[in-house]
Every structure is written in C-alpha cells, then in structure tokens.
Image (cartoon, rainbow, N blue to C red):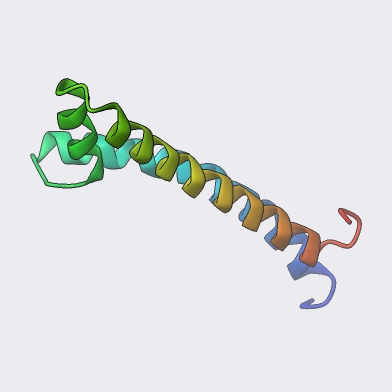
Length: 86
C-alpha cells in the first residue's frame, strides 16, 4: 500500500495544496480588512493610497514569489512521488 498507492494518492494532494496558496493569500487580505488587523496586505492598501510605488512593487513581488515557490515545490514533490512525471 505505501509503495504503490500512497505516492499516487499524494501527488494530486500536493498539486491542490500549491493551488490553494493563492486562495489563502487572497483570504488573508479579506481577513485583514474585515477585522482591521495589521499585516502586509493592509500595508499594501495604505502605501497604494500614498502612491509609494517602490513598496507596492516589493509587496507584490513578495506575494508572487510565495505563489511561484509553492507551485515549484508541488511540482518537485509530484515528480518525486510519481516517476511517470519525470
């Protein structure tokens, strides 16, 4: 079971986990706005209203990097679990 079934079952889970990273990032913005919590995305909203383009670019690149790294890790895990992907 561990040798044959588990790797095939875990590959889609890794893919869905990486896909949900973008959803989590979006939901963090909603939570910070709804409960008025301090955080990166509240900071992004504040600096965007001040037109501080350098800080806006850094925060967007940071978020994009997080999503790309999560997708790359999911692809690596999927290739490690399923030799057909390689």
